[in-house]
Length: 154
Image 1 (cartoon, rainbow, N blue to C red):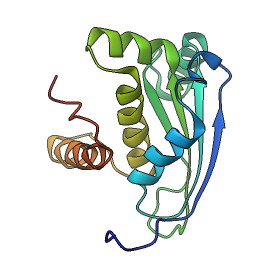
Image 2 (image 1 turned 180 degrees about the vertical axis):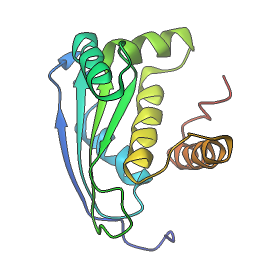
Image 3 (image 1 turned 90 degrees about the vertical axis):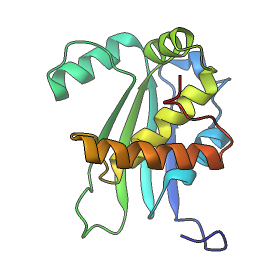
Image 4 (image 1 turned 135 degrees about the vertical axis):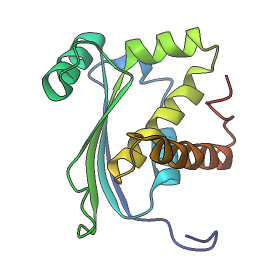
């Protein structure tokens, strides 16, 4: 997509069942971060959850019994689909802990994980070194356009 081209269409739902970040991470910020990572039209839900819900989802869907920072449930990963559909789940407790431990601004950390989740929704992964390098490079470029520092140079 060129600088002059139109942004992909986006239908974005934001849910805050864990409302601790609702005043810090606003819907307009989320929309901007999501839009920056979109390569095609999308219907996405971003949901902020507590550690309990994050752990249940990670255990039930990935077989890992702990809360993780971001989970992406992509429903349209095939190349035939014209619209990316996914739920992106962010665990507030993990986000806050990681940002503190990594000495990052919470907002920058959340922006990175939103971009990461949106890329997953569009079929990117980091299952091998080559795919991880490609995904990290995209994340760094997208975040740079948003004036957010490289999250991997901690």
